[in-house]
Length: 417
Image (cartoon, rainbow, N blue to C red; front, side):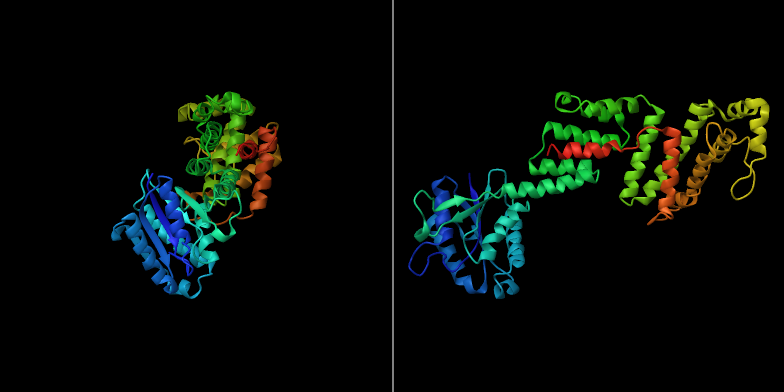
C-alpha cells in the first residue's frame, strides 16, 4: 500500500554529523521494506533547518527516484521558526501539512507521520493531530536512537494513539447523548468507527421518540430486542396507541428538555400545545364532553347548549375574560371556551388547577410574537413560577410519575459506549 510521508525536518536529517542516518531516512527504509513505498513527502522546516530539508529532498529523489513535484518543502511561519518549542504553533503547522496531504489521499494510501524529527513540540504535534481526529488514515511512527536501543527493541515502530482518540470521541458522544442530540451522537459514533447495531438502534429510538414519531421509534428496536431492555418497547406501546395520559407526559418531558437547553421559543410552542391538550383531556376524560375538532362547529355548540339543562351555556354567556370582554359564542371552540367550561366543573378541576391553567395561558402573547411576528425569545419571565404551575397541573390532572424516561435512556446508552 503506497504512503505519504509527513515530517518536520530536524538537525539530524538526513544524516547526523557522525553520519548516522536521521529518523526520516530510517522510517523511509522501514516502510519500503514493509511494501509501503513512499509516493509523496511533505517536509516542514524552520529557517534553521532549510538546508537539512533540501538535503533530505535530494536523498529522497536519489534513493526513491521520487520526482521533485512529489516532494513538498514547507517553511513554517516566522513565529514558529523563532520559537520552535511552542506546541500550539507546532500543532497548527502539522495540521496544515495534513490538510495538504488529504487533498491527494485516496482509499489505498496511508499517511505516515514521523514523530521522531525536530523539537519535542514538533514530535508531539503529530500524535495530537491523530488523537484529535485530523489524521484518521494516519500512523504515528517512532524511531529510536540507535545508540540507545535495548535487546529486543525495534528501531522503528508504530505508536498507536487511537486509544486516546477513542477516549476523546467517547467524551464528546456522552455529552451529545446527555444533551439529547441523538442524531449527532450517531454520526460521531459512525465517524469514530465505534458504532454497534445496539447503539444505532437506541439512538434512532431516542431521536424518533423525541420527534413524536413513535412508530419509527418502535421499528428502530426491531432486530435488537434480545440485546435491549424490554422496558423501551413497553414504554412506546401506549404512545403508539394514542394513550392521552402517556402523550401528555411525553409532551411535558419534551417541553422540559427545550427549557433546559434554553430553546425558549420552542418551549413556548410546546407549552401551549400541552396546554390545549390538557384542556381537551379534562373535557373528554374527566367531564365526558367531546367538542373537539371532530365535530362541526354548530354541532359542538348544540352539545354545549344541552349540557346541564343549559346552565353551562349560561355560564359561558356570563363569563368575563381576563382582560375584560365576553367569550365569542357560536364561533370556533377556543382555548378560552375550553378553560371556561373546565372552570364550570370544580369537582373535576379544582380551583388551584384552573388558576394554574390561567397563569400558563398568560404566556400566549409571548408565544404569539415568537410564532407570528418572528420575535426572538431569550428568556422566560418568572420561569420558576411558570414551572410551579405547570408541575401542579401535570400532577393533579395527569398524575403518575413525572420522571423523564429519556434521562434513563441517556444513561442506558452511555453505559453501553
